[in-house]
Length: 247
Image 1 (spheres, rainbow, N blue to C red):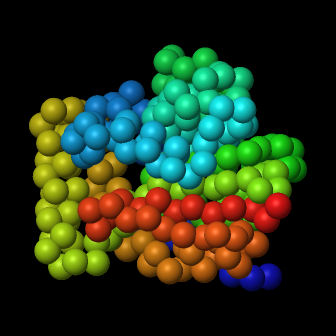
Image 2: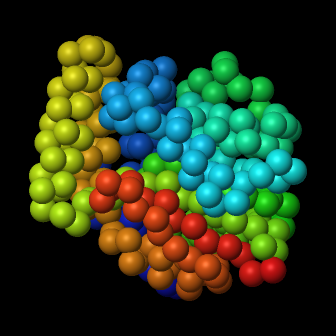
Image 3: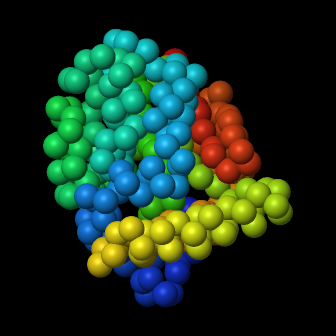
């Protein structure tokens, strides 16, 4: 059996082994779900909604497509997709966190599924567009995840993975480390005391800092059978991975 391709190493201060990571992250997202939109506005300077809509449109999302938003969270990417396709039944959200799904349910009337990215309860070749926003670092196996994405996509279907990566520039790397690794957790402790928000953002930065390089993700998409594989970078940190299932 091929060893899983993990997005980052085990962090001993958070969990003892790779097998415990999924339970740890699910619990962390469950406990921070009702604060997550506020956290997002803090670390994205309020530009997240515009960026998500632009990335979806540039990747080819248009009305008439069936969308599966994996790791839907509080529905941030799904909301942007819905603004483009205009049909609530055409956007399906999926997440492992029950509380994240509850937050999405409060604001969006889209179908929701509780499941993992590595085992999608979705029919073969039934989806036109798979999106995942800032959650690739939390899957257990890149290969298994990408194989599932390819399975559920129709021929010619598109996958868009939005991520934050460790900047290449030393100056930007230092700035990102200070802002995401120190300032945002501090602000979370100050603005949202007695919550796990600061712990989430500390863990968030750790996964960014130690995530596999961009090339590994692109290579694995190609290995799993995707074509037209590319990555668009903004501000040396924001990555939009795009790929297409052969027609």
